[in-house]
Length: 126
Image: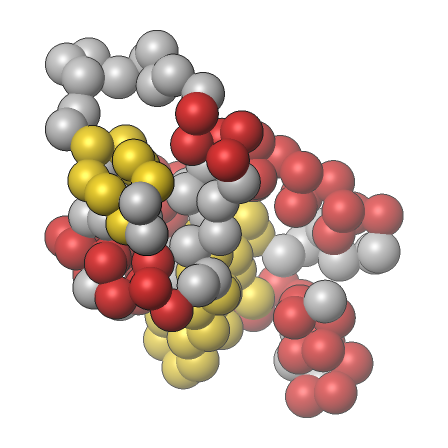
């Protein structure tokens, strides 16, 4: 919805917009939804996908579901320490709860930055 508003209301080209998500499953789902809306040129990825890259308009998602948080982080080696935000344990390998990774994420925006998520989670990450 945010991407569509930028394109329709502000007259921004969709290839000037990027989205950073904390979880690979979020990336995959959002890419599919954007393609269905004719916005497939919007770049969507995790922070690792944005290494050395910037976007004119960047949306950073701090949104997480209980399912994603409960899922074990099997690919991490060594296991990361979890932090607690709002009573939930969150793997510190994500944007959520890791100030350094959060800072890198928000620095990828050239002109406009929108951070989406619960304010308590954003405070925990900043």
